[in-house]
Image (cartoon, rainbow over all chains, first blue to last red; front, side):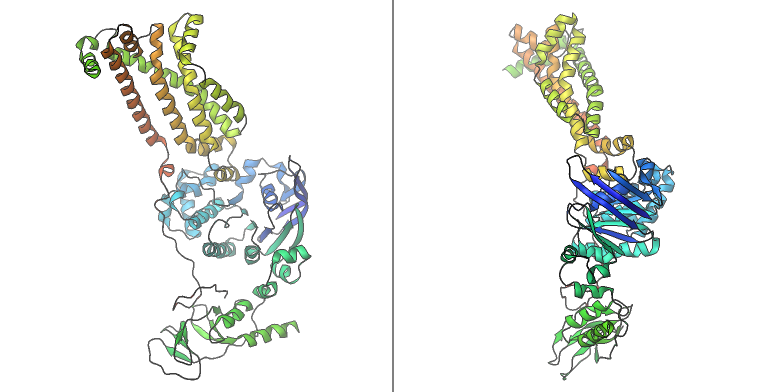
Length: 349
Length: 246
């Protein structure tokens, strides 16, 4: 658990980066600090491992005032991931990951063995360990950065805009990976970002901060979307928040209907209905329109995912029928947007 | 004509034996260069690393080393000869003063130029100041540091000739003698030897640089590795853009 008590940080030039911050980060959760630049989110994060010391107030990690611990010792017990990874260019990937274990006195052999395990954990092939950071893609470097932070198995992980320098597709993959890791490792993670979508996607709780270092709202993401504390938060959360809040609504009550299918490769004639093309494993491959033309499908909705996916699936489908699949990607049935909206309406009841 | 004379001088057996032979002079020249670069390194490397590491005194350092560069070495050597009464120390000090600025600049800039994210990560991992310096900053500063040493060596090799003014048998001797008696073969021959020595030493240092600079720093981003795209829940045929939210 990390606790900020009345924490204020004023820099020498007179700017107040953090102003009277009171906040508790629960153990075993991902907590995101989000806000525009100059809101003090990074400064707050850096006060946890004493990269910056507060002007006044107390930061506690597991009940202990961090100012009572000497910085190198404190930092070796806290994982630290930064933007663009900050990998050591003169060391191999494996030795980068082994940094903290080596600092804490492990033998080289044991540290490298641990490093190899971590590369596997973050989904990198073992042979990457012998390469140098410059030989990796941005996404791979970021994974190595996460592996390095986890090497000594610290209970707390600080992540300062770790994914903001990679392209959106890679970023989404890294976010998924982080959520998967967290489900496995159960760390206390503080994650800083300026991207509200990222915050809502990965945060269990989100602290929205405003310029001048004031906490505007500290709540689970669903609550930020449905009950923003003030105009600043509402504005920062952005447009479409009604639609986006459906990411936090489960899909119970949505009925899945049958749909006519055509086996891939088989002949077909025109009929009055849309029919779904499936392969031998029953995986959807596209639609056949009533005029017998083949049309690509929309997004797929996996059974059990939040209701937003069901609605999107229906809205993006050329036939108006959202395709529902099971966990293996096999066809489970279809839903319509009207049906999904009825479920949402009835929930409001 | 002059080059034929120079070649004749270089090949004359008389010049290859005795206390004033070419090998002796090359040896003495080398010794002074070595002493000067070593002496300058002892001063400039720790100073440059310290200032680069702490970030304190950078302005003073840059100003000071620029001021040093402005000192004429010949005048300094003559002055030190006059006040110290001996050649060796004066020449060494003069050459050290010449060699300090490039080495200082290399060490300082080397540490200063290490990616701020890398230094931040080193701190955040829990490295102490000394660990950060030796394990991260110095290895990453090596390319520029070696560059500074090469620079200093070239300047010292060229300038060690001035030692001849105060009676030391460096490769400056044939230059002075040749000029005095208008023996241009000897003059050009000496100059050729100095140039050769400079090229050889620079080559040696380049080799040393290749040995000590970590492999990861020599690599370029040329060999980009393949990137695995994340799994998308999207119908595979035909390709359609747009995000899946399922």
